[in-house]
Amino acid sequence: MFIGSLKLSSPLILAPLAGISDLPFRLLNRAFGCELAFTEMISARGLAHRDKKTLAYLASCDDDTPRGIQLLGSNADLLCRALEVLETHQHEVIDFNAACPVPKVIKKGEGASLLKDPKKLRDLLKRIVQNTTKPVTVKIRSGWDHHSINAVEVACCAQDAGIHAIFVHGRTMAQGYHGTVDYDIIRQVKQAVCIPVIGSG
Image 1 (tube, helix red, strand yellow):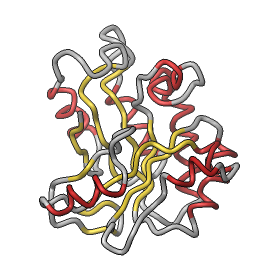
Image 2 (cartoon, rainbow, N blue to C red):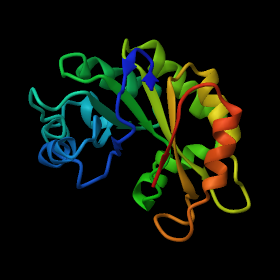
Image 3 (tube, helix red, strand yellow):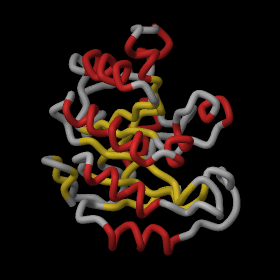
Image 4 (cartoon, helix red, strand yellow):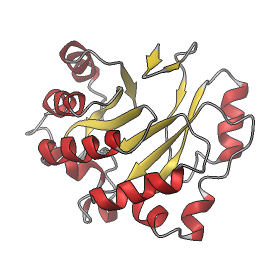
């Protein structure tokens, strides 16, 4: 599978798990066959302001490759400034979080809240694609709740923005991390776009 120019020989990808996907955990997963591994979700605002705690999430080593960095944000200018900071840090992929259901993230209009505005998400992704030379991916959910399952629409908007792959968590924002995963929505997304689709969650 290719994500942009990055060729992956293993289908195993370590998701960006907040509070879990630190350097030792990534290396442990690589030892068991995971090829591409993502950092924890990292605040674009924190990176843009070079916050020490935020920069600590970027800790890496020579064996930590290929590595993806997941960004969280909803302000295009801050996202672009964060990308400038990342130019001096080794990584092969940029992932954008449009899936986090945590209330403090939702209140800021970030994470899964962007599922309610696919056009805004598309515009943010366009800015990211335009301001990095790395392949760009996005993580989404099936929708906001069971009344608004819009993963296919969101995925098509993301593809229009020029991203290189989509990660789909088959639960809604309202479900959080509980309840049944909707594998059919992942299939529908796969059928709707031409770029790689990876199931998550």
